[in-house]
Length: 500
Image (cartoon, rainbow, N blue to C red; front, side):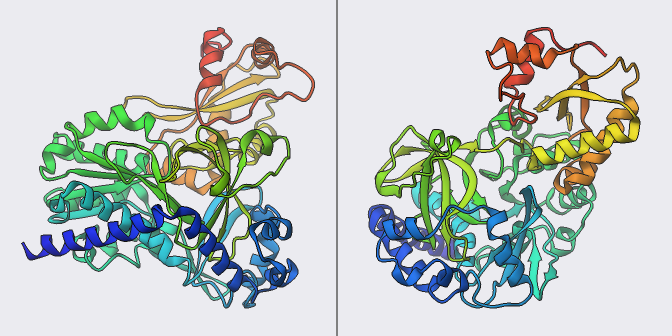
């Protein structure tokens, strides 16, 4: 009883603090920018970009260009050499590793000033849920966050690892005793063995909160069913809250409903290595409350402008609802004018709420793998060289199935010549993809998804598709990679895919 009263008090107190900045959004963001500039003046980046002359947001836009990881990499390389005060005063506390750029693995700095944002976001999402629903009982049992290994490496003397692994070292005090799995299990690198160990640790526990990336949760749910023959909601009778983020939940919704077997509450969160941006604050609404006072200054560029190389940046003061924006951030980790690559749309103002609409660049991350164009192009090039088989054109899409671990990447390929046996090509291509992208390799080896499958497209089939949408010739190109099945489904509809 005392614990429930204490949690309820903490949740209501935190809700009050959240509403304070949520009801004063413009002021919160102006104060955030002012504080960031004050810190930035003490850095090499700040000196190069004349932070001492910045007096307003307009000054900031003039002095600080839009950046991606590649343009900031020269500064991060200096940090790796132990040089201080480069992007942010001192040295980072951590480097969070992530993929998804043309330069390969990224090292995103996390400082002592930015770390609280990354940790507080998830806590706020949970406490806001409790404050709004009164369901303190979700903390009466155990909880799990399916995550990467908490084992950390060193890069230039700075602790380095995946964000989920770093977060495992900073669990809130009121959740520590209830957290599963054990550190020993969490450190298992082989994902399939790790999930099996997690199932053994949790199946007889009173689990009330389950959280993680949907593709990882699906594998956990399936293994629970394999062991018990029961749906998750029957195994864990007090399980009532599902927390997810990282990839779109939509493709998993129907499958999860079957695996769980009953209705549970859910919270969507919007975290990344660069910052924790938003969380679902109401059960009645699926849009996400943008976090405005946690060391992140937000800017937005309309997607159509960005694609036309018009970087007309606006702050939240000037955004419109119903418009697709590219999300730009400046953070307490020294990411200045940083293009996240994400696109968002405001569903409301006062409070400022968003939905995540996708990525500005082509990518495939339906299962959390973060595959980019460069990786698929390199894999196909190396496979052709290895097998002696030539390819005219191709495109890749995710394939979702209702079968257990049945989802996969579907490659639609227009081969240069008749190739009867594609098994060697298919196997080689999958291995090349695994060597290109560790996250994809983890999903394959952990049997979260199946190896890729090739669909032979009829001669010039992809050109026929482009012609059908009026985009054949000129600078128009078939998208090499998609995170949805719009192109894939159209290829089937037009009967451009040959039987194997």
